[in-house]
Picture 1 (tube, rainbow, N blue to C red):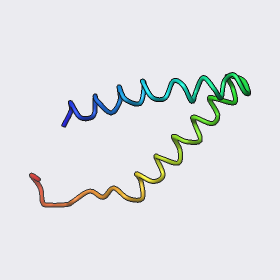
Picture 2 (picture 1 turned 180 degrees about the horizontal axis):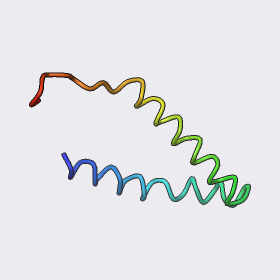
Picture 3 (picture 1 turned 120 degrees about the vertical axis):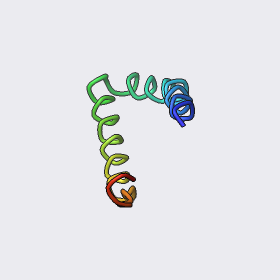
Picture 4 (picture 1 turned 90 degrees about the horizontal axis):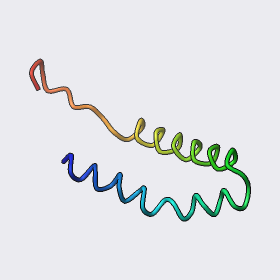
Length: 60
């Protein structure tokens, strides 16, 4: 499971550079960071509403 998480993180780094470069060239770095932060908040809100913790008792 940790390998899958690491793979997805690396894939995000590889495939996220080109779109971020285009946003920085079109606007500026501050706007690019605000867009990235807004996207992160959307993803966090989606995870907050969709991921549930299963309560199975005291020891899992």
